[in-house]
Image (tube, rainbow, N blue to C red; front, side, top):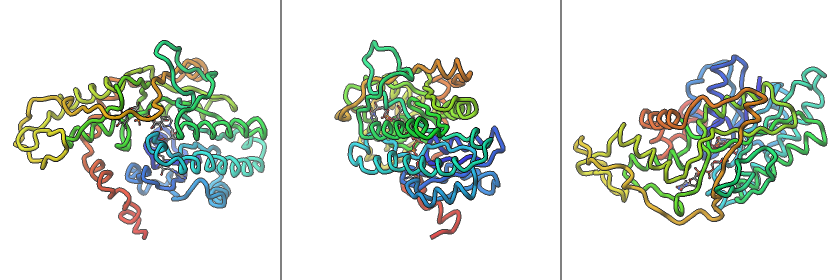
Length: 373
Ligand code: NAD
Ligand code: DAU
């Protein structure tokens, strides 16, 4: 089996769902269930004997050691992290704790477990660090995209904590021989994305008649990748990546934030036109939600509001993923247009998921589903 950390989050949940569609190899999901962990993402696996969930903290070394001894995974895929840049600016401590101490704890527990494995299992074992393109820092408009050789220049507490974790992972390979793999992915989007991040926030706010906040001038560029393509890339790297190597993962979809928001608005305009009547898609978010069933004929784009910029805001990320394509044959399956349309439809089709995330009811899932206190 494989051990996945942070599997109740956005990418981890997509990864587990994809994994169990393409293989029968069991998955142990270790997740603390912070605000970002949502077991409802994995509700379709209820009763599936290939899936085990343990609520726990990656900083809890005795727990991690017990799990490794009991389940004897052949690989660890490490997603667990505090992941939101804006939260890291308000409260960096949790980022240092989970992203740095947590990765250190996992590495030490993995090293102890791995060093005792029989030779063949030892050689086959992998520790996959799911990192980010943000560790490379910010690019000027004309600079070439990040390659794996780009120096680390993190600019936010989040990216600094991920960079620190990556350095530990690298050192555990060089110093102790632990067979590690590191991937640096660009911005993901898709189903189960927590609506604090740009794309799901814009979808959810637009439908609620609330403002669509754009930081600064909205000309910051990100390189967007559909989450399913990231999951496939991790499977490729886990299967055939060379221990000690890093692989960039990206979609080659560089877009300014304002363009992204306008594209989301255009999709919503086509699929779910703004309501008319009382609610009228009011942009102050104070409407009473009543609609006469007709559209007001205006675009959701009228809800866009420019707000104060994010401190230290990275201007541009762009990924050169040619190493992954050349060495392991990975290419994204989704274009940005197809992936974004799928994503917007997913949110329109899952109003209950959105409502339970917004009300906080998703955090009752353990009680609702397992009857736990
Ligand atoms: P997320 O915030 O949606 O999910 C994080 C998960 O980790 C949650 O389920 C949370 O409960 C869990 N977690 C947090 N602290 C924990 C702890 N101490 N012990 C155990 N579990 C803990 O994050 P995401 O967007 O799914 O990102 C997953 C990983 O991918 C992160 O490492 C992130 O740095 C990386 N990444 C994300 C993106 C992106 O666009 N979202 C892009 C590149 C890389
Ligand atoms: O690049 C990979 C990274 O992508 C991951 O490592 C992070 O975990 C993930 O959160 C994401 O970081 P970003 O900061 O790029 O994502 P976010 O969705 O928070 O913001 C995307 C861009 O949109 C960024 O330039 C900030 C801007 N933004 C964001 C929000 C939430 C706005 O303009 N308004 C907003 O309200």
